[in-house]
Image (cartoon, rainbow, N blue to C red; front, side, top):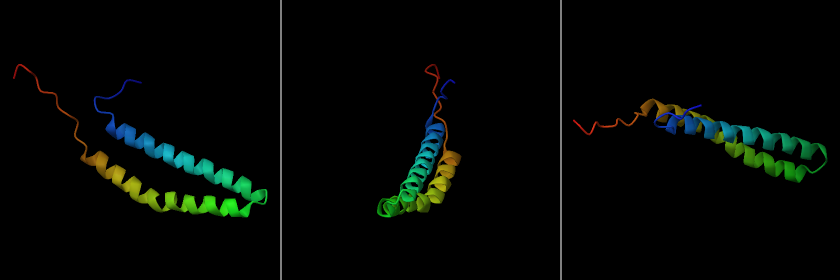
Length: 80
C-alpha cells in the first residue's frame, strides 16, 4: 500500500490500534496469571490497565479532532 503524502492521520490511527491491542493482550495475560493463583500480580496488571481504559475515550476523541483539523501540506509550484 503506498503511503499518502502526509501519513500523520494514518499513523495516529495505527498507533492507537496498537495501544488497544497491547492492552487486550496484557488483559488476557493477567487473566491467565490470576487463574494460576498469582492474584497480586493480576491486581497490579489490572491497575495499569485501568490507566489505559481511563484514557482511551479521551485519546479516541482527540485523535478524531486532530484528524478533522488535519490539512495536507500543499506543495507550492516553484514556477508560481
